[in-house]
Image 1 (cartoon, rainbow, N blue to C red):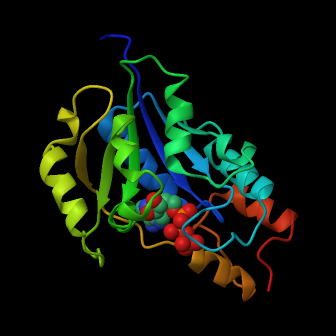
Image 2 (cartoon, helix red, strand yellow):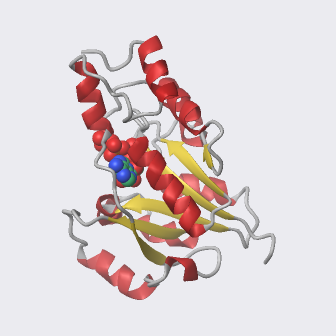
Length: 214
Ligand code: ATP
């Protein structure tokens, strides 16, 4: 199993990408010893409003953010698809490119995890990946019964003990940075600074393209 790869994926609208995403992703990647953690910007998120900024700008900002930030990378496959961005499609497509024994970790915040039963073909997700839930002390959502059943069947206490290419769930306790894209859009729309909330290269891109102005 020496050549088995460990790959994490973090989907999002990244409207814009910020230090909460990046610091969180880096911490998970280091803690889990991932070979790669791919940020996957979504084109038309099925569960939320249309992003304020176009796909190509959001992708360009993620590219700026992860440049020279190995093991963080960007994966643009959801933007190349002309269908809604369902995670199951992304996972199937990723799996088609990996060796059977490679481990795939889908990273979700607790709130996103609680919404899982509403996802397209949600009961098939664990056939392709493990799920790592970022637990946060201030989590407001509650797991529904189908999700509690799934956790009872698939939960592994130690994330570093997840075995095989897919099929289990584990929780990572992480100190979250209280930063959201919503907050950043609002600051910029009001003519305030977003310095230190996004990487300087992302801020330069935002300014150069006049994004998020009120
Ligand atoms: P918005 O404010 O527009 O809802 P967001 O800041 O939550 O956006 P998303 O692109 O929706 O960003 O997030 C993508 C992923 O990153 C989600 O799984 C989300 O839980 C996670 N995430 C967002 N903000 C943080 C943060 N501050 N710390 C850790 N993870 C975060």
